[in-house]
Image (cartoon, rainbow, N blue to C red; front, side, top):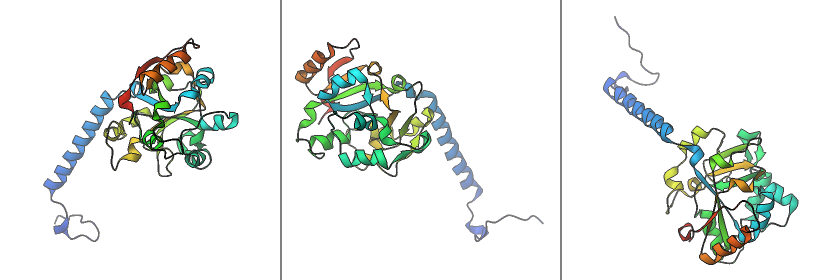
Length: 245
């Protein structure tokens, strides 16, 4: 007599039929194959990353590189455009577990997209600056490959790194699993957290790692160009009005 194993607490008639189980396996095999294809075509080093800052900070960035909030807090003199209480949380509460639990504020943050939800909040006056202030904010542009440090930690998050439920990663292949549809969307209702995924570099990013600067209008681009005359490294400056609100 043949005996059949039935899961505890489940009558044999409740078990999925073999055809159903085979279909589920086929679905999973299809998903696995699709994921492998995505990994084969995904090129993390080429992904562009963006940091927004006030134009008045540009001379200091040219001189010392782009610094983390922790370094800037120690030095002072930097024009802050974000929420002070969230910056404090990133400095004292939220840690990056894949980087020896260093605080988020010890890293220079980048978004994977321009026109971020944070810029929207800043431009609306939500962080204490005047409404409409986005014209004075520039996008510093690099790429994952250019910004990767040789001797310091780095990571990326699956959402806003200032949120307590965010996960962090130190494996570039895992970057393919970010919600890129949300990151690249111009409308992201219900996906604000995912759109704000961040790339993080410990302590600082050298000035020569940036290859572009996006500006709101021609007047700001001219001002940036004038500042760059004092630098041997001059990223390409472009008016990118579609990066703003």
